[in-house]
Length: 190
Length: 400
Image 1 (cartoon, rainbow over the protein chains, first blue to last red):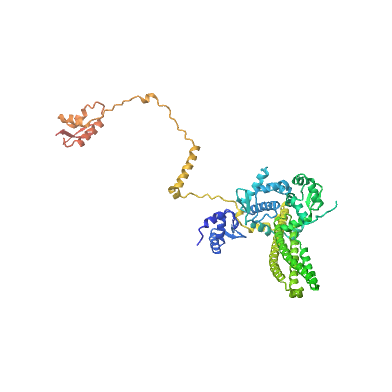
Image 2 (cartoon, chains in turn purple, red):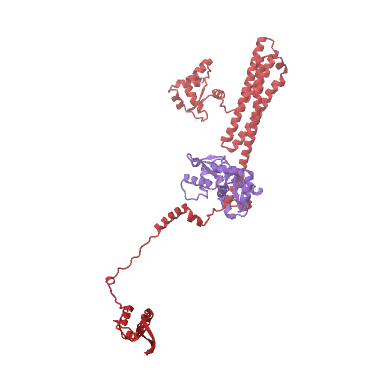
C-alpha cells in the first residue's frame, strides 16, 4: 500500500527540494521517517519511476533525479560554480559551517566588519548580483539563495537563526566527487 | 622588591577575605589578560596600600598599568574550583614515586610511631592519586571537547588534539603504574600491612582507576573521531580551495572531470522550475462553491479594466413624433353580400357595377366574385348558364 503522503512527498521533491532528517519543519521530518521505512521507500521508488522521477536516498536526505535531465550542461556548470563560490564564502565565515550548524544573518554581517577576505568573497559572489549595495542586504540575499536551494532552513523566527540541513551533504559529496588530476593539483600553489 | 610570604594561614585567609571583591573580579577576568590597575583601585575603594600589600605578599603581580593574580594562587584557585586549563600529570608521577619511597621507609623502620607516620603518608598519597587521576581524566575530556568546538585556528586545533592525545597516553601509563604498584611492586608491604583503612583506600583507588580506564578508552575514541573529522574537513577545504583556484583561472572545465560528473548528475535541483498550465476541470467550475467565488473575484477584476461606454443615439426629429393617420378602405364582403341579396341581379354584373367607395379593378372584382361564392355558397344559387366578359367565363349566380 502506498502511503497517503505520496502526493505531499511528490510536491516537495519535484521542485528540486530535499526531504532532510534534520529539518526544523516537523512535517518534513515526519515525511523523512516515512521514506526511511524500506518497504515504503521501495514501493514509492517504483511508483515514481513510472512517471520518470527517480526517488533517491542520499546521506540523511531524499531527492528526485531523472534518467534524462532537462537541464543542459551549461546550466549545471553555472549552478555548480555558484555553489563552489557559496561554499567558499560560508567556510570562510566559519570553518565548522556544516550540517547542524546554526547561524544568523547578523553574525555574518558582523564578521564582514573585520574580515576583509570574507568581504571580498561576498563582493565577488555572482548569484546575488551587483545591485545590492548594502552588506546586510547582500547577506540576506545569500541566505535566501541557500534557503531556496534547500540547504539551510529558518529554525527560529524570533532571533533569525538558520540551521544547515543534511542536504548540505549533497554539496560536499559533489565537491568531493570532482576529480583533479595529480599533475594539475601539483600546479596549484599552496 | 623584597618578596615576603604570609606568616601563617590565618594571615593568608584574612588577606584573601579582605580583598575578596578584587580577587573575585580578577579571577573572573583571568583569561582576558587585561586587568587595569585603575579598575583594581576602584574595587579597593582607592586605598592604594591594600593593593601594595597583596603585591608585597606575591598574591598579585603588577605589570605596567596591568594587574594579574600570581600564578601560584591562580593555579590553586583553579584546581580547587576544578576549572584548571592545564592537566598536571607531574603530580601523579610524583605521588607514585613518593609512595614507593615511603613504602621503603616504612619497611625499613622499626619504630612503630614513625612507621605509622609513613603509613599515614602512604594512605594520604594513595587517596591523592585517585583524586588527581580522576580529575585529570575529567579535565582531559573537557579540554578535548572544548578544543574541537572552540579552537578557531584549524592547524592549532589539530595540533592541540594531538597533544591531548599524548596526554591521554601519559595518564594511561601513570594509571598503569599505579595499578602495578598496588599489585606487584611491593608484595611484602601490601601483604604484611594489616591496616583496614589502607585496604579500603586501595579498593577505592582500584575502582577509581578502573573508572578512569573506561573513560580513557572513551576519550581515545572521541579524539580519533575528532581528528578524523578535522582531517576530512581539511581534505574538503583543500579540495574546495583547489576547485576555486581552477575556477578563478577558467581552467576548471578543461582540467577536471566536472563536466563528466555533472552530466551523470540529473538532480531536479538543476532544472528550471516549470509552471504547469493546467486546464480547469469543468465539473469543478460548475459545481464547486470555491470556483464560483474565484470566478466572481476574477470578474471584478475584469469589470474594473474594461469600461463600457454606452453609445448614445441622436435626438429624434419632432415631425417623427406627430400623429400620422393613414386611411385604407377595406372591402366588407358581408355588406356586399347583403346588398346583393336585396337585388335581383346576377352576382357578376352586380359586383362589376358595385360602388366600393374606391377604385377597384376588374381583376379584383373577379376575385371578390369568387370569394363571395366560396364564402356564402349556401345562400346563393349557382346556375349552369355561363356568360363571357373580357375573356372571363363566369357562372350566372342569383340570390336564393
